[in-house]
Length: 302
Image (cartoon, rainbow, N blue to C red; front, top):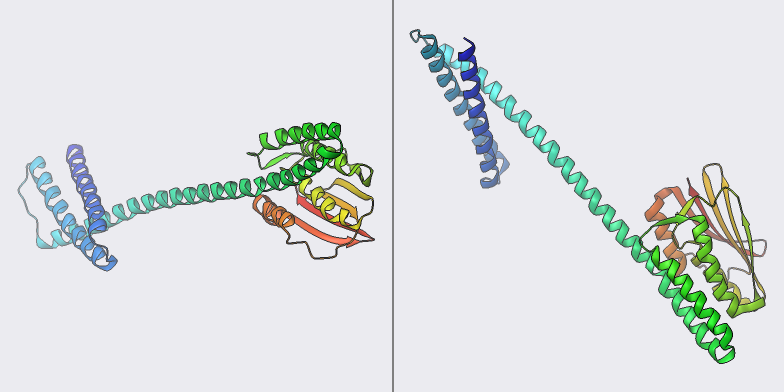
């Protein structure tokens, strides 16, 4: 009896696998879903009838008894096999479709991540040429005035670019590393502006090991210099970085006023896009005037 059941199981499994292969071919050949399901239903019925006759012949042959199969038994057994075959194939395709869906979802996430990283790198690289052009223009003017300062400026530019470009593939960097790049940048600007530029730092002790977007401080300070120096006064820039519970607050202040709305200017637009790509709604940038100073403020939820 065990042998009979085993042989019948193997026969059923064979025809189920064959049915699945047939449906895969039908799916490629027949694009109309309605026609496809009608053909598949017909195949299920035929396969069920074949399994019934094969299993009955196996049973009567191996058990060595005479056949006594009525039409009623054939109908009942066929209906049972239809339910069995339909359930088996449905379960198979459900599992396969689930795996395909998970694979497509993973591919979509990977593609989205690659697109985000590429866009982020492009936005990040926009900072370097902008700064480099400004620095080279300043250097050209300085060569005619003071060659010693010009050499110092070349050294500072080289150091800044070395540090900035070696981390161009990383979207985030430690605050302490960002401050190092900012200092290299400010050394260049101080050679140009001398006593007309004053920088004051107010840094909390618990922020140096936190990570912020790469080359985020430098464009904020660059914007402050670009717009603050237009007033023709001594420019004082305050770099304030604090941690308040689950938020990191970066605040750049400079004396002067907002004569125009520069929220969507090149540098600020770049900053807004980068924050959105990295943090989404967990980061916010604002630019406003308060008590005679321009405030550039970034709040990042840690």
